[in-house]
Length: 161
Image (cartoon, rainbow, N blue to C red; front, side, top):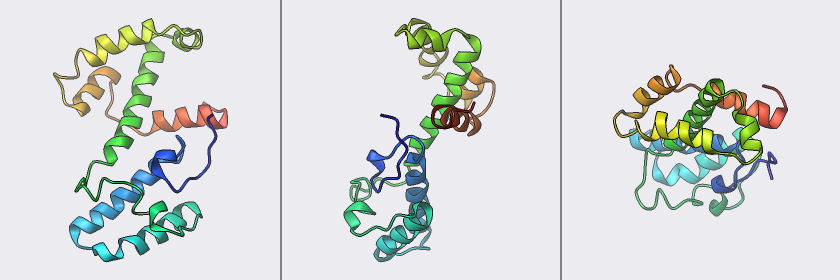
């Protein structure tokens, strides 16, 4: 269920490699918007960057730049929000665990009330009052950071916290 295996397709990617897909997409979007990359060059650039990043060779555009509908619908610039969500979730969870040391045990037993109450009080009730960076600072005491996400991934997939 939690295997780490590189995938051509973003929505089939595992938790460890998903954000690499996002990084590739956002890099291409920036290059398109700034004129550094022509639309006609997207497939070749995608294939080259994906192979450099993953070691996997793209054989058809359906496994590369044409796998998502976002660009064909004109959706640019929001892919990083997926990674921001991953970063924020890990940081919020780290804070919830610090404030409730028994949380992991409760969750393992299927008891979600402590976490749900914490989320409702700290996040859900405040989310419409503050923009995301301010909410993260208020709830966790720090701006969004990568370290909690990396610690989560290491703990889950490498057995180290």
